[in-house]
Length: 140
Image (cartoon, rainbow, N blue to C red; front, side, top):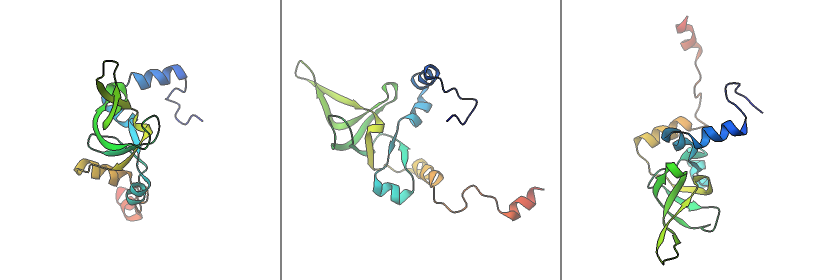
């Protein structure tokens, strides 16, 4: 069901918005779910993926492989994980691109911005975004 009348539900326009999105919008599109332990700890379901997060691949030919994210390639909507390589015909190899929705974040690289994001997204925080009666009386 369509909730926002300002956003089109047409497939053509949705695809244009997705594949034509700029880098900062792609950051959010390239989110990955957290592991069950991290979901319990932070009360957050998913986060935009970043370099140096540790992930487990959940789908595809590299399923159950673990490693650190070496690159977030926003232009191609993929991430590169260390030691996850594909072979070339000439015997060389290159990093396999994996979509972030197909991995599970097992360890988060925390800095002050990431901690602020986790605090903001915390679903169980008491009275999040609520005004008290005292604050409402001060507005008038």
